[in-house]
Image (tube, rainbow over all chains, first blue to last red; front, top):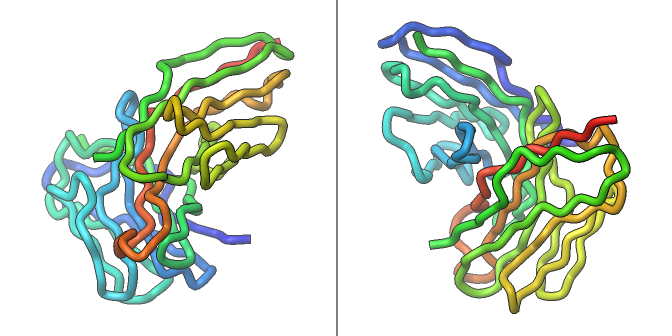
Length: 113
Length: 118
């Protein structure tokens, strides 16, 4: 079974802190994604990566950056956390280009105070 | 651009009731369509999919038919159980082809929460 893990289920951070969210998949998938999930807004794509060191902006990249140094790991970085970044963050992966079935991690609920 | 519209929730049903969750889409060409489910405290998981017009996806008693003429992909189940309580997301992905792009991006609807009671 494909497994996507996220480093924390719950995080509480203060405004202005630098925050790292880690995602690891164990099935050698090419594509990885970061979404945020908010009530009434569904899932919105922040960034995605289709190869090591390759990344593309999604629909809402402002205030975020990403890093993919190894194929299995995709990190989301909040350079200076703000209260409007309080949300559920979901990581996902797919095995190859043009495959749309995405495998999701359990999510990280981030609260910025 | 592509978009997905789902019926607003929450939807509250008694066990063994019939379920319909409406989903319509706007997309260029002929997208692939998906239903994902998110159980409490978990990430999303694929429930079913359809890749071309008139295809019917099915899984765990749920069904959805890809209707090109009405641009719809409504989710149905004949008899819901308490264990079906979850949030359901409709999604689309562009049709696979030479111009698909560099990644497998999905467009999601806003989700519909289903609560099933005894």
